[in-house]
Image 1 (cartoon, rainbow, N blue to C red):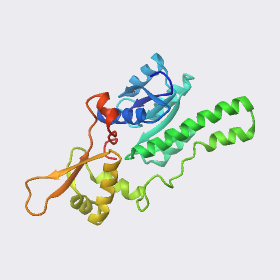
Image 2 (cartoon, rainbow, N blue to C red):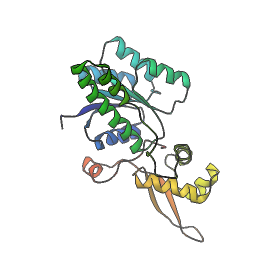
Image 3 (cartoon, rainbow, N blue to C red):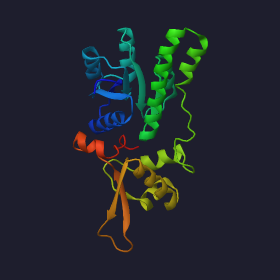
Length: 245
C-alpha cells in the first residue's frame, strides 16, 4: 500500500511500538512508514524516507522526544508530530505546543482515542490544502478547528477517561488479574472495575480468560493483549493496547 498519510512510530518499547503500528494500520487513510526505537533511529528513518507524521514517545533512551523535534525543525524537515507519552509535566506540554506538536496523547489510551486524533489530523491536512488554494481566513480557521478533539462520545455512556486510566494502570504488563483484584487496587467496586475491563476487552486492548485452580467460584482474569504473530492475524482481529493502557 503506497497511498495515505505515512506515519513513523517512535517508541523504545518494541511491543508498544508494534502495537502503535498496528493501530495506525487500522485507521483508514493512514499507512505505517516504519518503526524506530530511538531518536537517532528516527532521524535516520526520516532522512531515508520522510514520513508525513511521527507518533512520538517523548521518553526515548538516547534523546528526549522534544529535542528530536527541535533537531527536525532545525534541519527544516517538514513533518507533523503527535506526542504519545506518559509524561504529564506541564512544562513539557508547553514545549510541545511551542514546537508545533499537533496533538498530545497521554498513555495509557485506547485505539479509539488514537483513531480520533488521526481522523482529526487527516481532516486538518485536507483543510490546509483547501486553505492554500483559497487563501481565506475562514478556510484557515476551519483547518485549525479540525485539530480540536472533544472528549464527548469517545467512551461509552457512564465511563470516564480518569477511571479508565486508573483501571488500566492497575493492570500491570504481564499480569493476569481479576476484576476483584483490580477493584481493590483502584479503590473502586468490583462491578465498576469489571465494566472498564470489559470495555478494554471489547476494543481488543485486553484479553480475558477463565482462571483455573482456585477454590470457590471460578473467576475471569484479564491481561494485556499481545501483538499478533503475523500481519494476516493482525488483520483478522482488533489490535492490542499500548502497554498499560
